[in-house]
Image: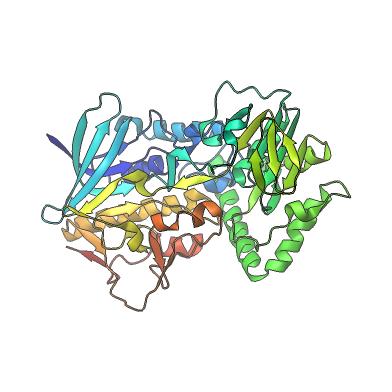
Length: 482
């Protein structure tokens, strides 16, 4: 099998992968590279998910790239506009010529002797296996399984005469006009789908096992949009981005320090938007704010639907499906023509790629992540993972910048390898994701760990990460160059 050599190989042509390629072209202009994308299109999440109302769950001034202003007037944007933004970024930076679609990476082996990754790929169109070697390997696949979403095995599911749909595989021809819809779930996906479907459905019921903290946010940032009339897009973007980063950090740390006060404030704001006699148990979680990610409700659409009686929320557990709907453990029966199982995602590291070092399997869940970028004991390998308490792209940009610094540092030192090694026996392992969301908790054994001390500890703080990733010393005694 003939091998092609590239300096850098990026896996994933979504928001992270396109951004990483832009940083690489800017900071390492002499490096050859390619982006391998398993699917037929760029965009990742924003191309895959097509359910009604799909939108950002972060403001676009922070979900956008740090080098490309978001100029759309919507601060909370629909998925189609985000996909256009990604494609526009790729086009402006001449990235698409580097993307190889329908390329499934099956395995990657690092050779210490040759200082090379050997990547095995299956061409999804021809079925032909290919081999590429590279010096640096960067994973921009996120940590979701793009092929299969999480669907619990509900009792009696086959008896249901209606249609069951998972948001990850939304049928393009699904007509829910005038239909009774039950959406199972209470996370960001359910909170997006329910108001969107309620515009055409006869009625939509959100069936949840437990409530989620919600906050109403405006789709349009009127103050920022007024600034656009006076300042350039670049300056407006910078101001909005800086403001929102500061607000986000402030709200998060206030929530963690004063959970009861935060809880009271959140519930009070929701109660103002609901009918006077509404039972607040449906919006009162048993955990503290930011134990799970806070869910945005655009322009209060969920609360408006409840007030207009087009949306209902039921807090209960499913006993079984019936022919005409769902029977709950309380004895209540929900009739439905369509059931949407917004029951979460399955986690998967590196898109399922089998990693090895010198032909020996490399087990990622046993390792820690250095500065949220490098896997312990794994040479010339970076992974892009965003924040859980802020927008994904804030961290993705910093990781890509750091990878470029690392590659340039190797060149300056005349090195071919870099690897993060932990020599501190006092560092304890902990979960890399500190949220209590069920989709995370059931898959922790698939993810790498974080440590109890910096730089192995994830700080979930953009300001601190900017100092360490963008400005910190490369020679810290942990990353070894050779």
